[in-house]
Image (cartoon, rainbow, N blue to C red; front, side):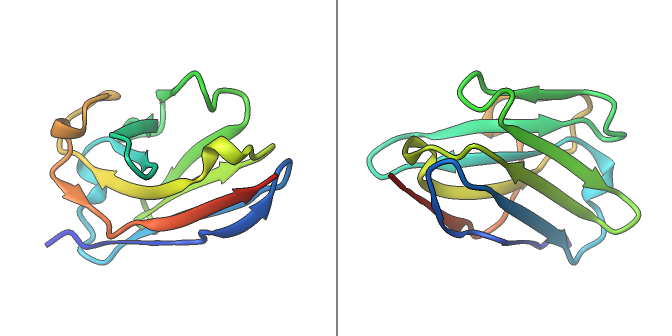
Length: 124
């Protein structure tokens, strides 16, 4: 059974960096795409970045393009999100998600496994 556990969140200053990690104790995340979503208070859960099963394709939301990098290590069943040049508007709870679909699915409904979330707070 897939169990996703995020780590690496915390407090950063604007312009700083954080690296999020997601570990799968069930060892099944390599079967499809994986993604990071985020949800700010009072807002919907939005896609941040998604990476295909073999890490050949990646998609980024316009708001993070050029600042964030998604990566995965299927041998270690881990997913990462390197976040640079952080902005206060990046403040949110970040969720790791796993899908059984190929490619880079964009909708939250495409993902059937979710982590518990990790808080990222960026101060100005």
